[in-house]
Length: 529
Image: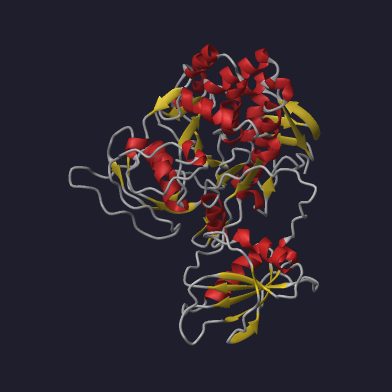
């Protein structure tokens, strides 16, 4: 078994389940309930997007607990580590997920949800009258750690997303809750963490390794253990519902103020859940900066307080045990705040309900593909004075020719290469009269001194065995200029590379999560924006 496979949890035998589905808007469920079980909904129905609420949003402190997990590896005392283990609540999940799951990879994917349960002394103050109403969630995230454990991507799933939810068992009553197109947080509200796990895997086809569930009882202790978190406001903010009254400018929030800040919607922007997600992501990034700073990691007293607060407010799967936590923490030593990017699933308004959203296709599909394809451990480059500078994608001119009898392949490949920045100039047919070209090749002109270098810049973006560029171009049977949907750039000078697609064609590699574009929050994001 390769090194990067060793860091992933092994699949275990489990009960069979219904196949996952990727569609986010298909009507119907996975079939009706068996005769011995009657459908039952439980908990309160998901609220409408514009409706006022006093419930706390969980996004800000969810990743605080995860950050605590990651920095545990800095502790040298195993006894202390075992003491922390006793703070964590465990839940058996994997045996209930079924066998029909996405394949496991060397990356690590952690499902993170916030629970608004009012059970427990620390949670009753936020609504004791709701203590027996079960759990709900406003926040569902997926933390993706690269195989090298040096980069992290945090995906936020909008609460108001309408998606396909499978049949699930109610964790309290054991009754079957029929699947169908529902608001995404209904999976947790009706079926708990197992249903949420199955829903996210079926929609994204990303294998989830672990889960972390956080309630808000320990939030104030966590923020206070970090000495508070710096925020920045462009204007004075007053939100009576959230009990928030803050002046504009930079300031540090603690305890109840921090709770109010991550809770508020109506005092910020358009008051939407989507807008609140962005603010939470910035808050999380600020937490990451502070939790991985030398001031915390080198002060055992501060670190101890932070980790005790973090671990006392989380529930994890049984496989995420002490040994596994230590393994993850040690493998993630290279992860810093600079390595974290947060983004929201691409979305658009739901045509059927303006208060709901649906995921944008193909944008969301590409995002999930980039996570699924992030499976390789890459060695750190060795400094070498003779190493040539990397050639940027936008400087590589490409002709894509189809050498097979499969229609439309050249255009499809050209679109994917253009999306990744390559300058595709022509597409066409290069299939000889004798039959399909058996092997995919990368070619450049014999007289192009730099042709191999430019073709070599394209080679890593092609799936399958590495291609060695070949000198000598082919004459296509037909050719036409490629029209890209990406805005045209100025003409460039340099070699023209040919990609000849053969029967063994494996596809274009998805861009890495690190190259995610769009509305991304990272260490460079200005909290005052």
